[in-house]
Amino acid sequence: MKSNATAGFKSKPPGAKELGGPAPPLDSKKEKSEEENFKEMEEEVHRLLESSAEHKVKKMFTEALNKAKDAASKEKKIRQLRE
Image (cartoon, rainbow, N blue to C red; front, side, top):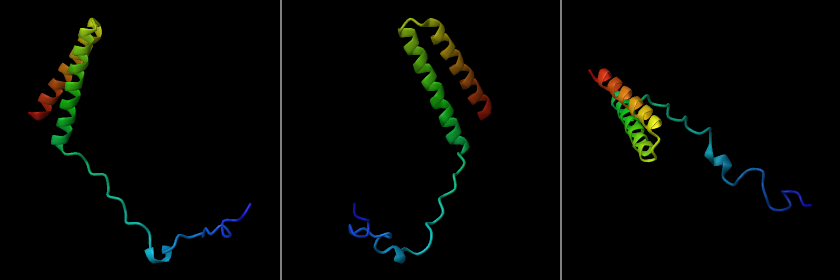
């Protein structure tokens, strides 16, 4: 078996000395705006309603009712927060 050096590989890539210094810092995670939070909550309500409708079609009425109740409570929470 040959060593890496005899196979033509080098320990550092060409031009590594030219890069100089560490990578720039990553952007800090920005907090979501209030509007973005409301949009996510509304999307969750929509997903719950869609799930409720799917359960109803499959004649899984208890699950459909529970999903609809969850959607209604989340919608009510959104309305209270917007006031």
